[in-house]
Image 1 (cartoon, rainbow, N blue to C red):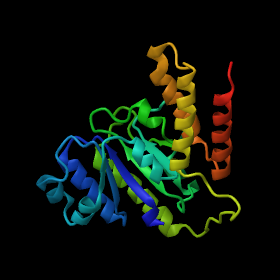
Image 2 (image 1 turned 90 degrees about the horizontal axis):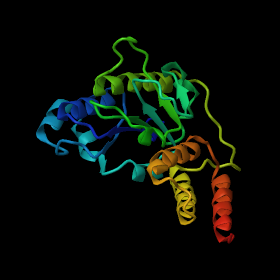
Image 3 (image 1 turned 45 degrees about the vertical axis):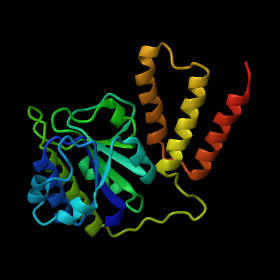
Image 4 (image 1 turned 30 degrees about the vertical axis):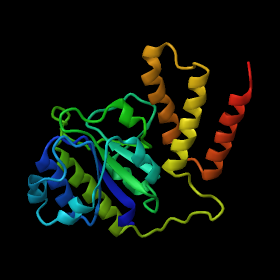
Length: 237
């Protein structure tokens, strides 16, 4: 199950933090690192030096310009934040992570040091995770946040006695399936000039993505919805 888990750093700003995150991952037996549009050159000597023995994680990490392509390869996205988000997305506590099916491809998303994740990134999430801390000083260092989450998952995977059993008749939709379905819906909505006024399009897209990505759909359900969207687009008004 350890191989099913990825850690995503979205627009990290400091080389030292990237290296420290890789080291923290190896401490708890995780090896899949994804970096989105890093500010420093990646990799560089400072990242490798601060990874302290976790150079293979840096070497094998995957780098993307944006978050969207990553969604095709995971089943469940859990975003971390230091503040409560007034969005219609499920909030999960650190001690509730044992409810997650770690047989799925799980990714934990961490935002940039200065600003954290925007609502756009949050809209791709199944869950939002807030690490409990001092209410008057909530902001955690990037690598510190990651190591807290990594340790919690490590403990769950090592102590968990029960196993999850999936029905052979029902296969969960991958993020790739959901991504294709939501893009089809958005494409047809754009064709009928649904997103208006234009200045509200961004927030409308965030809300729409949030609806699709937080649902735990099956492959069959995504095919049905895709067929519905395709059929509706053919109907002339």
